Length: 140
Image 1 (cartoon, helix red, strand yellow):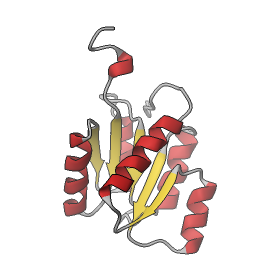
Image 2: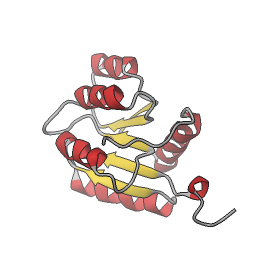
Image 3: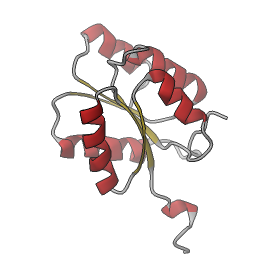
């Protein structure tokens, strides 16, 4: 098999996190784990990244405490366009109602901060392993 075969493509993670320090640390972590990481600080930015044809997204890692849109609203929008897109939520605060709403929207995994990084890495890997076999998503 050729080294540039699509099956050997590194997975692309869209990290949606408004806290710059957390976003930078998670980016470094997932790059070390072999991911291509695209970042967004707001829900609006995340939709913009999804609309960019440069790299199809394999999994979304989403903080639900965004400044411009609720995590549930963004997750619902993702589900509208990409019903089988793995979405992993990692948040510092979520009410039981928010957590239940996100689960109804079909998030793959739900984690509360602070979280051990090996656990988060395993959750994202699990989300990728569990996804239905379909081409990576692009909002074009």
